[in-house]
Length: 201
Image (cartoon, rainbow, N blue to C red; front, side):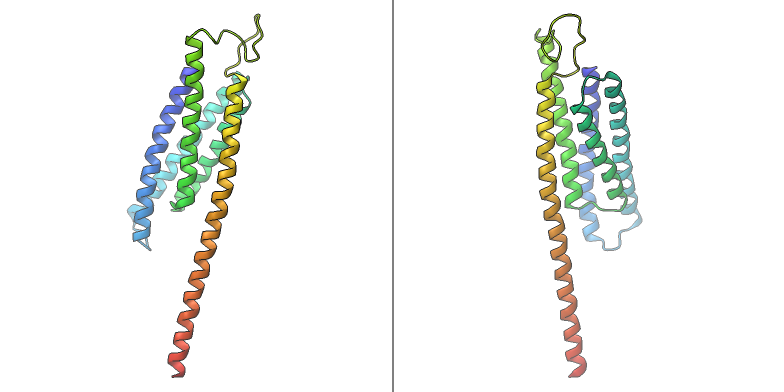
């Protein structure tokens, strides 16, 4: 099962990396086109659909993990990532390819890399003969957990770090947007006063 999950996550990482690179390109095209042409709109839809496909793949992984039943943290990590993918799909379909969208995509890629790393470490242990006991180290005929507690805790810590960073990024993003709105308002006021001076003059 671990090997199958590793292959799934690796494929998802490749697809998300491609979408991320194309999102960067889309962002540049949007900056150069105040009124985006049809090709740019279609590209946003295509990238949004790609994120939706990844969300569907994440749901399939969740179903596998729920059926397996021994992991809680990893399932929560996947569910959190699926929520990000759903949000990305909506953003890109609205042609929001900006900084915050790109940051969420990078978070998804980092999550997938960490999942792959955790699985590879566990597979290496099993191949080295260290994985013959259950997740709590007890002996007997108890079924072995998919991943040990240490791996789950590692993913939980990483998830918390990403949540904290996302909060800071979002606050910065909102502040940046507010500052840009204030700057535009100042420019509008400036134009108004210039017009008034011209009229009165």
